[in-house]
Every structure is written in C-alpha cells, then in structure tokens.
Length: 82
Image 1 (cartoon, rainbow, N blue to C red):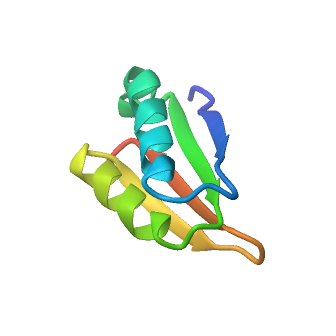
Image 2 (image 1 turned 90 degrees about the vertical axis):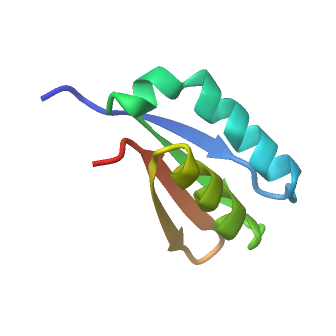
C-alpha cells in the first residue's frame, strides 16, 4: 500500500472568503493526487465559518471531508471519496 502524502495548510488568522479561496487553490493544485488517494489536505483554521464553507465546497467537488474541533483551532481533512 502506498503512503498517503499529507499536505498541510495553515490559515489561522484568516477570514472568509480568503480562507475558502486559498483552500480552493490548493485543491486545484493537488487535484490529481487528492482524487486518486495519493494525498490528503489538512487545513488548520480558527475561523468558524470555514467549518461550513470549506467542507460544503469540497464535498461538491467530490471529496470526503472530516472536521474536527481541536483545543486551539479546527482541523479540516479533505481527501479521496471512498
């Protein structure tokens, strides 16, 4: 089994719509690796609205999305749809 590459994106301190635009750019940049399961994108954010806008957009693009509420931020993991 191939190792899945983790792409980390720290957008702490940024607010929407900038957060969504930055994440969409990364999704497009790494689209091939994300779609075939070679990579996953992990986004760290402290802007609560992004826990709605980013997952909604990523799901519409065909990705699986998981949102976790950590002590100091939110973590959004985006990857291949199973």
